[in-house]
Image 1 (cartoon, rainbow, N blue to C red):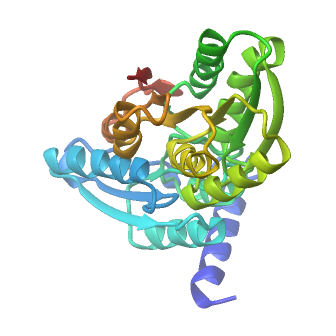
Image 2 (tube, rainbow, N blue to C red):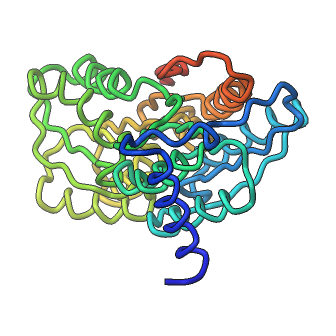
Length: 306
């Protein structure tokens, strides 16, 4: 264990001891109120900047912070949960006032959230939640509703009983669970889901997984992918097979919108990642000023078709 990690463990332990038997941090470790936005330093940890959706989310944070003269430090977890925990510890050491975290894994990030809780740094999560720890608010689209919208569109286009494949996101991510849950609210009653497999929200994995699914289930009629990157990978695999299969993605990123307009991707459940970033910064400012913030802040969704 390096010196930094030893320091983090000792500090967290000391704070819990000083806070008595309660898990509440001591009063002096509560978030410091700041009346001026320009005095606030934001730490943003993004799951991956190899995905256009999260680049847009990051841009939303940086633009809104800059508009309010707030300092922002951005770190990229590169879809690595262990790296993200280390990144958050580094942000804490750099003296950030508030943490904005877009978790790679909702369970794994809990330890980092709890470390921030122990020393009174407020945490706001973006797009995905944390399973444990005290989070001020989750700023996200209604992923359950979006998944159901995708299922409903497949029923509308192909009728009940259509054979469908599902490309799932990163196992353990709240977005994966919620989008799948929403999709199955419709699919379990009205569709025949013949295959579902994780492709980790990644385009190349989406292509490879789709190729395997097509070999085992050549008669599928539609695909619901938990994000656009996987959907775009699936489109490549389907094009190579020469089949005509309806594919719906989720996010509304630039490449997906272009694909919908070109008549390749049937639809995408479009989020507004820049808006998610903006709303998170606004929530951070309100939190530091001592204002009440809702436990969830929704960003509207829309179905984009040709």
